[in-house]
Length: 63
Image (cartoon, rainbow, N blue to C red; front, side):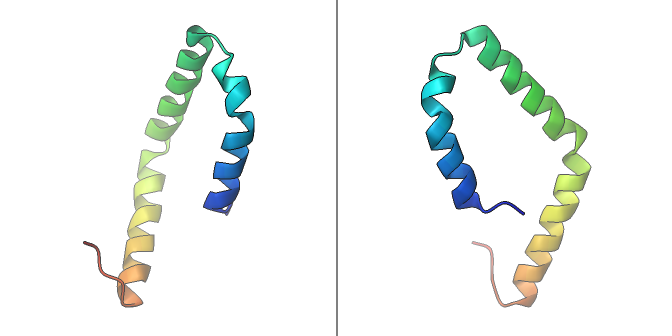
């Protein structure tokens, strides 16, 4: 899995390029991301459930 910090660093590097895109292009990208999340929602929820269960087994508690 990609480290969260790596994703943040990459996002910071491309931010100036993204800022120059038109609203139409950015909106299309956002809609595509939303569709991908919806398509994989069951998988994401299952993975999150596993993470929460592992954390609970390791002594972590949610707030």
